Structure formats: structure tokens, C-alpha cells
Length: 213
Picture 1 (cartoon, rainbow, N blue to C red):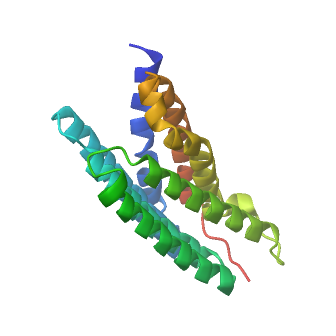
Picture 2 (cartoon, rainbow, N blue to C red):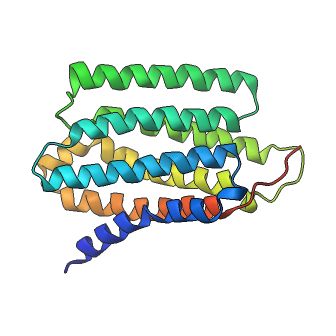
């Protein structure tokens, strides 16, 4: 078996780790971490659906369009509750609505449901990179002392930033990658960052919420 195959299996298995962490630490999860855990559960379900439809020989790209919409909704809610600044909260709502509209328009008029949503994935990436950077900025400017390494959302946010900041260029150039027959290299980068992100999500869900002022 090739290294690419082994990494792909590891990537698939890594998606289960956040779920196991959430089950193990469920009684210690606050509202934000429970919301994140619910998203990771949906993500695992979508991964299963994508694999089953692929094995059946069906086009599974409409499921990716739908998952992007769900990702925008969940992460916008997570960051809305995580951010304390009222103006930024309003900006999150506005940006989330704009992103949802762009993704829907893209699915209907540009990159249709049966095509890979490169534009939609790029929009999602830009949105979440912005949200994650704002959250990190908030952590760095807290007035009270807090162990950020014991803050669950810190690790989840790190996973979000690493995954989307690396893969955004791959999402943008996906069509050229296919045309150049470099899809395997693309998936290797995606697979590795997915494993790293899932490990960070797992660490985050194993953290006990810290008291904040």
C-alpha cells in the first residue's frame, strides 16, 4: 500500500477523534464546545455520505455544497458567541449572510451543484481565516490572566486557522490542479492538514472550560 493510501486512512480515522473526545469530556463542555462537537459529528456524517456515494459511483459534489453552507452557519454561530465586541458580532452576522448568499448563488448560477465548489470553499476559507484571526486578537488583548493552552476554543481555533489558511490556495486552484493531473499532490496536502486540524480539535474538546471575567 502507498503512503498516500495510508495517510488517507489516517485522515478518515482522525475525524473520529474529536467525537470520542466530546463523548469522554461531554459533562465538562460549555455551550461553545458542545456546538463545536455537534459540527464535528455532522462533519463525520458527511464524510461517510461522501465515501458511500463515491463507492456507489454517484456524484457526491452536491453534498459538498451543502456542507459548506452548514460550516458557515455553525462556525459563524461559534465565533459570534466567542467574540465579546458588539461591533464585531454584528460584522460576523453581516459577513456570514453575505457568504451564504455567495455560496447559494455559486451553486445555482456559477459552479453548479454537480461541479466542485471551488469558489464556495474559497469564500468559506476567507471567512473562517478572518474569524479565527479576530478571535486570536481577542485572546491576546484580554485584561485578565488566563491559560490559553487550557482553553478549548483556542485549540479549535488553531485547527481552523491552520486548515483553511493552507488549503485556501488549493481550493482556489482546484480546477488547474485537476487539469495538470496533480490531484494526488493536492490531496496529500489536504489530508495532512486535515489530520493536524482533527488532532487540535480533539485537544480542544478534552479541555475543561476556564472561568472568565
